View (cartoon, rainbow, N blue to C red):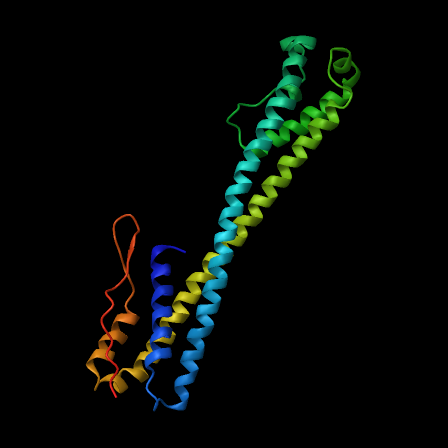
Length: 228
């Protein structure tokens, strides 16, 4: 959740706490509907915020895992094979598929090269083995490429979940704002004769301000005097 959405959630909770403690007894029956709507919003906001946080953490974990797998593929499989191919066949004689792209190439280019290298090396497998490569070097190269592909897919999925949760949080904030407006339309007239409670109600509805740097500043909490 961003700072604005977090402020909204805090405000909705204060509104609910106020209603728990100070809701007038003579509210009309229809008042229950927007209150129930607010309760639903609070539940959904908590659920989606948790999912958003989980997906963000999962995404960061997948980024680290992806980098480690890419480094393994490049350093332990592609680079030794490319260097050995240059020594075996000479620069002019090296199959284009056994040449490395730039280290800054994107993951799709690296994966395409890895698969091309595996196919090209398969044709000269015995030659590479005679020059010291292990019997399983082609299978190991393909397995490393597959591991990176799976990590990229997992990262895409975590991003999809984060986008879905972020959208849902924004929708629930809007839904909650409407519920509070409806509650206010009904309860504010009932509090007109109790200035302290009316001030507390207005304070509960107020969203926190945000300082530079994103730090939320909660509104001042006035003393609430119960009016008989």
